Length: 220
Ligand SMILES: [Ca+2]
Ligand SMILES: [Ca+2]
Image (cartoon, rainbow, N blue to C red):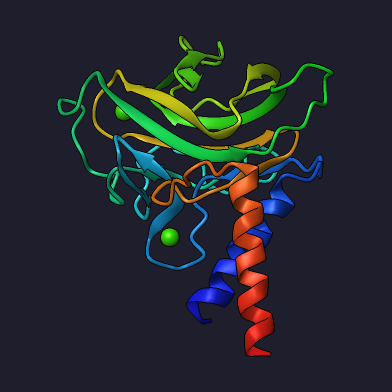
């Protein structure tokens, strides 16, 4: 693809995102379409998240569609054989970013709902949206790998890039991991966390499209 055709595709895609599509975004941890052993979207403490290849004792085998379609991710792919004396009370920040195109499903601009299902080691202490708590946790669960879910959680979104953080406290030390799936209801689009787009005014986007079309016609 030449630079100009790439530019045209990018501009066309950006314009398409501005149309009301009312499509929900669902993501499950452990997606690895490029087979590099790293989650394609999540980071952990600002580093890319590994798919866990060696789970700790007691962790349910995943994925289980009735529990979560996510797979375990963590800061290290090996989460077995680690003593509980290490990494105790370390908080791991599992982060996911997505673009919001601005649908209004509930009648209020930028208000939408989220559905979460997850398993964590140890406790999920909070889920935040752009730094604001969504009140989702499983603090005090009888088992650290307890199956948890929370539906119809209301959140206020920003136009453009948004960040969801899953905060997992490794209260018992040793292994740490998160497996989750979640749905963002509305016109949301996932973007790679390493490819944060700059917001573009509509006029500039239109100008870019006009230039791309002109170049395309000239070469035709
Ligand atoms: Ca990957
Ligand atoms: Ca642990």
